[in-house]
Length: 145
Image (cartoon, helix red, strand yellow):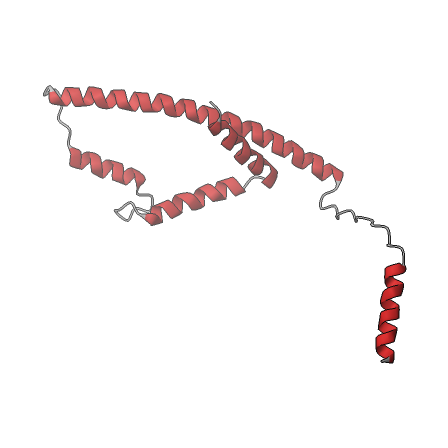
């Protein structure tokens, strides 16, 4: 009974006490100001380069698709007219050799893994700020017309 009385008195005293002022703590600085400026510059340069690369890729892709389509139509017309003969087996072998990067005779997931690992190694070679800005700029550049 005595313990219950002491607990109730302590609770009442705590409820009557004025609340302590709330002081939000500043988060610990991960980077000093010079590093923050450097990272901000890398973001902006990477973003600008990513945007320009995406715009150039879209324009080059449009031009390449028109050129490849026109070449296909011309070659198909020449074949139909009897002027050229296309050896499809040789064409398939040559194209497959172009995409078979590990030279095992087939294009499969191992070739994809080889390309993706080389690409990631190249992309992660640069700083995180530049790559983050580049990715954001590239995405923005692909989205805008």
